[in-house]
Structures are given as structure tokens and as C-alpha cells.
Length: 487
Image (cartoon, rainbow, N blue to C red; front, side, top):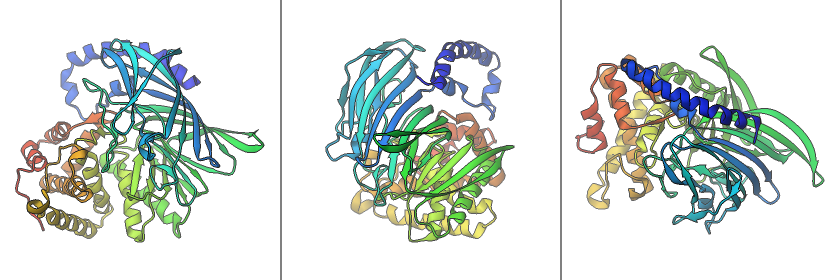
């Protein structure tokens, strides 16, 4: 176990005792609970910690890892369920090979199940607030594919979704399988301490920051060993390969944030880096300070998506349109507020992060003073959703926004309801309350729900705190009962 993990574990009982005292204090001063500057400290104090010692072999496209997870139960449990998403990226659903599993150093049997073999169950009797350490040894075989986990056409490796991750517990374990559409990820904020061994000549782009680099020779090859620390993020991602890179710092709330851009083919890399830096700056001013010390953007092929968000780390796929590429950088940066910091149930209410993030992609232009671009973009989105919604009689188009990813008939329907309609809802709220109150409400939403899971009710509550009851309006949109006007 790393020193960071040992520190987390030793402080766990102290934290839990402090939380009990905090409940009494909060009860005595319940009026403070409605304030917009309340961060969910409980979510951080009980969040899982991941310690991963891994080696990526470029020649064989494999990962070999030993992983420890410090987990604190939020309820009385008889088992622990984890996702092993790596299996969804293999044709036979067998990308990850679990070599052993232990709980508190005792070997346990485990079950891999689910229609795509992406669920892992360990027997474990726990009482609420008990903590255990799970240890796994495993290997992962990467496919040659332009996906979230795979070796891309350029030979670079997208290393995300490779590790076992504790499933969300909400009165019961969420056993959702991987889905064809959307982002089927639902997990708690966590901290990651990763020791990565790779060939010395490879570049590594990662969530968090590299705190130490050492060099060694192994099997006749020169290797480098990186110590990586990424605390209080939703999930962990890396990319390893042949990249060029640029880095620069921005000042956010009186502290420096290092912004990194890794790329393999970009004629204007400084412009790409500048867009990421500007996006962080304007969103910090509008919604609340970016919470991490680093942010990394990686140009990487994604066959079925323009980009993909992780904790303090995003993948952005190249496009023919330069403007679209820059907008994707802004979109994925906005996810650092709406997904990474403020979590949501992406499987049942995908609009809460994707719709808001799509709105922010073009709200960026409003914030930098280009109101014409903002208005034009929202009108284009409105026309697109209008065209999709007109398909109801022929393809059974369903405009309800709170439904499971598996209920969408086509990718077009998913995009229309989640991205387009979601963006139009936030545009409507922005128009109704005005920019100043909208920013105040979103800052409130951010601070109240940072590091935890937000719902539609929390969004409505944030606007109520500014004197606007938007419950019927938001419900009318999400239930698809309100008539919508299109321009």
C-alpha cells in the first residue's frame, strides 16, 4: 500500500467520528444547509481510494496490474460489486483476466456476471461505515481499435476503463451493463495513486499530476516509472504513445492550474491549448473555480465520439472542421464541472451532464462576448431537435429526458433528447432568469453538489435559492408534457 493510501486509511475512523459530530452541528444549524457554499465533505471523507501499480507493454498491447481499493460501506452489505468495463471492449467480453482477489489480505472467491461480463461480485459482510481493502491482480489485453480502451490507428493507447471500479451503491448495487449509446458510467468521486511503468520513449498524458519519475532497465529495455496522484476525481484516464505536447498555466482563484495539450497531428497546437485554457478560465468565473491543479487534453482517435471526459483529463478526436475541434475541447472542458465535479446518473438522466455541457459549449461564446455566435448555435440546435421530434409518428421518437440509455432506439434519438433538448432547456432557463441570476444558480448548483451526485431536484433547488421556482418548467421539459417552441 502506498504512503498516500496508508494515510487515507489511518484517517478513516477519525473522519467518520468527525462526520457524526458534524451531523449534530448541522442539525442545530439546519438553516445553513440551504447556503450555496456548502461542499459535500461527507462524499470526500468516505470516497474510495485506488492504489494501482501497473505496467503497459506496447509490444503486446497489455496491462499487468496490482490494484488496492480502500472502500467504506455506506450501508450494511453482504457483498461488494464492481464494474470491469474493460470486457466491453473485447469481442468475446474477456479483455480483463482477474488473477486473484483478496479482502483484507484474505483470498476470496469472486463472480463475473452480466450479459457483457462487466460486473464483478465479491462476498463481504460489512456494517455501515466499516472499511476494507480489496486487492486484485489482473491483466488487460487491448484491442486495436479507436475506442476508449484500445490501441488507436496511430499506435497510441487510450488507457481508460481498464481497472475494476466500485459500482454505485444507492440502497442497492447499480448493476448497469455497458450500453451502445451514451456514457454508461455511474460512480463516486475517488482518489487515485498510480505507479505506471512504460517504455522510456513513450509520452504519458494522465489525470492528475506526475509527482515523481524514475528510470530502470527491465528485460533489456529502458523503462520509466511514473508516480501519479489524482485526488477527488470521478474516474481516472491516461493515454500513452508518441505525442508532442505543450503546457501552460492559468490563474484560477489565486492558484496556478497547469494545462497540458498532447497531440500527434495539429497544425495549430497553441490555439488548441489556448482554447482549453480560456474555457477553464471563463467557466471558473461563471460556475465556480476549477477544483484541480492540472488539466490535460489529449488528441486521440475515437471512432464513435468527438471526445470523452474523465477526471482532469479528456480525449478529443480530430475533425475536418477546425471550429468543431475547438468546440469539442470546450465541451469536454465543461464536463469538468458537469460530470467530474458534479456527478449525475448518466444512465437514467444523461441530460443533466450532457445537455448542460452542450449548452456550455456555446454559452462559452456568450461569456467571451460573441453573442451572435451563441444565438446562432442555439437556433441551430433548436432546428435540429425540431427535425428529430417530428419523427414521432414514424419511428416512435420519445422526448422524455429521464429514461435509461437502453431505451433509446437510435443514436440520433439519444443525441436529440440528451444533447439538443437538454441544451435548449438550459437556454430557456438562462433566458427566463437572465444571465446574472443564471450564473448565480449554477454556482449554487456547483457548490452544493460538488463531489457528490446531483439530480433534477437539486437543479430546481439551486434556482429556488435565487428566487425562481422552475419546478414545473423543468418537469414539463423532462416529462415531455410541455409544448416547445422552435425558432
